[in-house]
Structures are given as structure tokens and as C-alpha cells.
Amino acid sequence: HSVITADGMLTESYLDTGNRSAFQQKGKVVRIGGTVKTWANDAGAPLEVARAFVEPLFHALEGRTNNVVDLQIPTTVETTTDPDLHLLTNTGAVVRPMRKSAQHYSFMLPPNTTSVHIVSRASRPSDVIGPFVDDRRYMGVAVADVRLLCAKQSHDITAHLQAEKPEGWYASANTTPHAWTNGNAMLPLGDHLTEGKMGILSMTIRAAGPYVMEDQKAAETKVRSA
Image (cartoon, rainbow, N blue to C red; front, side, top):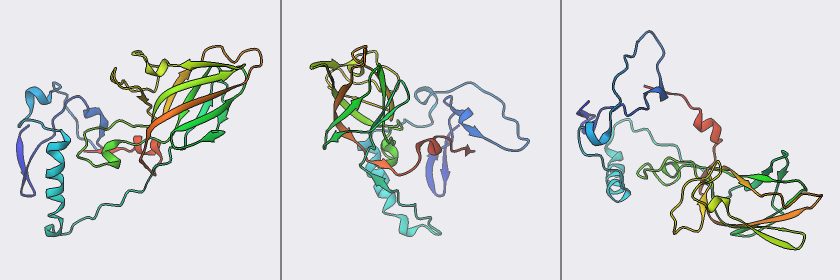
């Protein structure tokens, strides 16, 4: 592993930091395993991924594309700001919003709903903003306060704001009054909707999108070769 010159530019060869299994190679070539390395101890040059450092370099190189022979023009990525937000109940029912505005969504829940999955589109910041953003998480929607109204009573639902979150939520700072989903996040509601009670679940969405107009599962299952 070292700093090398590729197409007239200094770069760094692949460093196996534990993700070698993500690559597949056809043929009879045998890969001999080795010790997993780290950027902190084994990099050929200091690794800098901060956007403030990387983005100016990205745009400087982008401005030189007219001088590149046989340039491959990247495909324009189609995006949307519509999260296509809906719920999937513990009984398998799909619930679309009965009301929605820029930030507020309301859903009518059937009886015996004890939990829901908050389902939406999801994309990676590195795809929708630019490769200079070192964030490859699939981000769904940022959910703030959630309330369940049933039998003329209002219940605050806060599981997603706790330190230990249900499946599908990203950790958030203590000072952040919302949490991001990965596009399919579970939210427990308790036993408020028992005995035939229906309810209205309302939530505030602090941020959503943009999203790449591409099937997420297809993107996740693309096979990369090296």
C-alpha cells in the first residue's frame, strides 16, 4: 500500500480496512487474507474527509474536465423532495396520511395497532449532495415530536428520541430534538389502541430529502468488482 500516480495524479492504492468482502472477483484468482489495516496507522498520507477540505478540490478537478480526453460525462441524477411517507402497522396494514402539510403528517390508525414502521424514500448524502460529503448512510426523514390521539386523550410517543432507539433510527445528539430514520424505522406505540379503539398518529417532520429516484434495494445490492 502506498501513494501512487494514476493518470498523472497522485492518489492512494486500496487499503483493506475490513471491507474486502464487499468486492467480488470472478475467475481462478485466489485472494490471500491479511491483517485488517486502519487509515490512522497504515495510510500512505493523512486522510482528510471534511467537506470544507474536499469540496474545493472536487470542484477544481471538475473544472478541468474539458481537458480530459474521452471524457465520460456522468449521468444526471434525478431527485425528488417527496418522501412518499407512509406507515406499516404491526398487522401489515399500509396507512397513508389522512392530512399532510410541509412538516406535519397525520395518520388514522386501526384498532390493535401496537407499533408502526415509518416508511419513506431514503438516499445517501454522498449521492444527492456530492461525493465530497463523507456520509453514506441512507437517510429517510427527520422525525421530531409524535403524538397519538385516542379516546379524547393525547399521548406523547418518544421512543425515537431516547438514547436507546428502536430499529431503523440513527443516533442523534442530545441537543437535537429529532431523529433520522433509515427509510424504514420501527416506532412502538404501547397498548393505547386496544379494545377496539382507533387513533390518530401525528408527527412533525423536520427535514426530508432530496432523494435519488432509484430503487433503494437495487442500489444496495449492486455487485462491485475489483
